[in-house]
Length: 386
Image 1 (cartoon, rainbow, N blue to C red):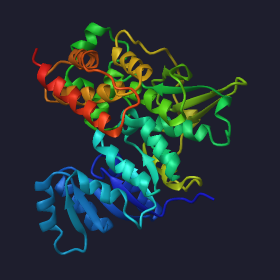
Image 2: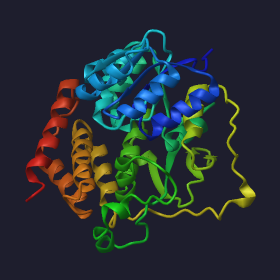
Image 3: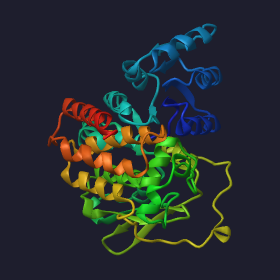
Image 4: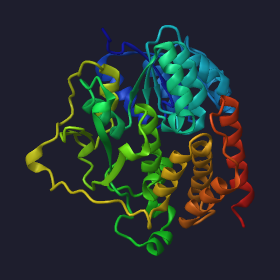
C-alpha cells in the first residue's frame, strides 16, 4: 500500500512553489531533510533555521559561502554547486523529493531521486519536456513514483485514479487561463512590455513561468509533459481556454464520460495532494464555493496570436531533442525579455530560429540532451541582437 510523505526534500525551496510547499509541509507536520536554492541567502537562512534540515545546497558558490558562515551555529551542512543537488535529492532519510526548481537544472537531481526510489512530487516540467522518455523509463525501471504538482497535471492525475487501462482515455484536456493578453491581436500582444506580461489574471507565480503563460508557451510545455507522463500522442492531448482557472483540467473517456477536477486557483492544493497521496489531508484553506463562482467558460486557444503553443506542438511531434531545443531556447529568450533586451514578439522569433537551425537527435542519450540544451542557449545568445 502506498503511503503519504513523512520526510521531504525541497529542490528550489526559496521560489514560489518551494515556499508554498514548506507552508503545506508545516501544516502536515512533515520532516524536512534538505533544502536547495540558487542564491537567495536571506530566505534560505530563515528556512533553514525554521525547518532545521540536515543539508542545504546553494548552487551559487558565493551564496553557499555566505550561508555557511550564517549557519555556523547550527548542525545544518551547507554545500555548493549543481552536483550537490544530486546528493540532496538522494537524501537517504527522505521518502519524497519536491522538484520545484525552474529549468533544466532539475534534470540531474530528478534522475538521482529516481535512482534512489523516491516519490517525485514533480513541479519542474522541463525535466519531462527535455528528457521525458528517459525519465519515465528510469522511473519505471527503479519503481520510483512520479506524482505531478502542476495544477493541470495534478487534475489529470486525480481524474485518472481508478483508471487501470490507459486505452480507456479518449483525450486529456488541459485548461489554460489565456494569460494577460487574451483577446488581443498578435500586433497588440507584440507591443506589450515586461510589466504587462507579469500581470497574470489568476495565479501568483515566478517571473519565468508568468511570461510563459503570457506567450502560451507554458501550455505548450504542459502538452509535452502530459504526453510523456501518460505516454499518449499529441492527438490525445488537447487545450481549451478557461479564463476562470476553476476547472484545472479534464479527462474524456472512450465511453463519452468527462471527469474534471475543480478547485480554487491555489497551488497549495496540488502540492498537498502530491504529499498526502493516496490519502487526502485536511486543508485549513477556504474551499471552493460553487454558488459564488463566476460563470465557467471555455474557448479555443488562438494559435495565430500565440504561436508558441503551436511551436511546442511541432516539437512534440518531432520528438528527440526537439523539445530540449525548444525549452532551452525559450528559457534564454525569456531571460532576455525579462531584462528588457528583446520585445515580446522576439520570444517566438528567436525560439523558432533555434529550432530551425539546430539538428534534432532522435532517441537521444542524456549526453545528447545536455548537448542540445547547450547548443540552443548558445544559438540564442549569438543571434538575439540580429
